[in-house]
Length: 197
Image 1 (cartoon, one colour):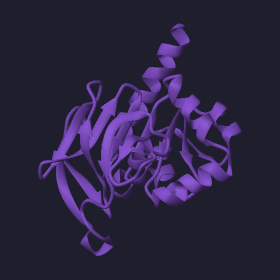
Image 2 (tube, rainbow, N blue to C red; image 1 turned 135 degrees about the vertical axis):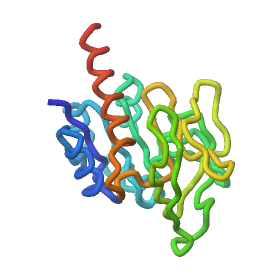
Image 3 (cartoon, rainbow, N blue to C red; image 1 turned 90 degrees about the horizontal axis):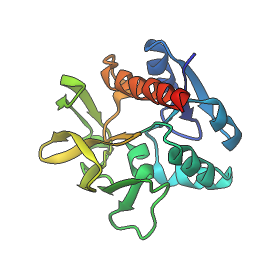
Image 4 (cartoon, rainbow, N blue to C red; image 1 turned 180 degrees about the vertical axis):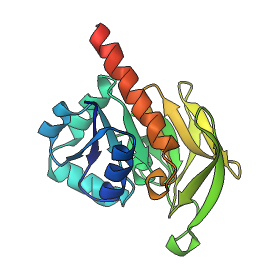
């Protein structure tokens, strides 16, 4: 059975696990580098990116996460996960995992009390997707190999680069599983591709 992990150091882990299971896939909470070898794809959930990075360092997971991405296993970063994946973060000298060729701006929509929902039209996923934005970042700039999947109010809020998918909103906080299903299809396609090698 296809296994999708959720980096379970901090953030919306249970919500993502529930959404993955609704798509008919096994959800695995990943808390160590060793557990990465048993999964086919990984979600970096929303939460607090600085805290998550500190815990990644505490558990010596930075290099293993980069290795996981380098062998083209799919990774989906949502909200804080988007920040973790970004090659460059405005106002910061250092990135975190830094494997996606994008520049991001943290908290670009304001504080928690300025959280909102918006209907999004997402390429390859569909229209009227309920985007939940909570202290959300956005993508300021993308590299040549990055496909923009969605914009809201002129800001890029979802993009894909090969096996990397990232969004500024929280797909796990809705009953609409189309974004998670899209990632599940990415994971299944990568399993088929690896099996052909």
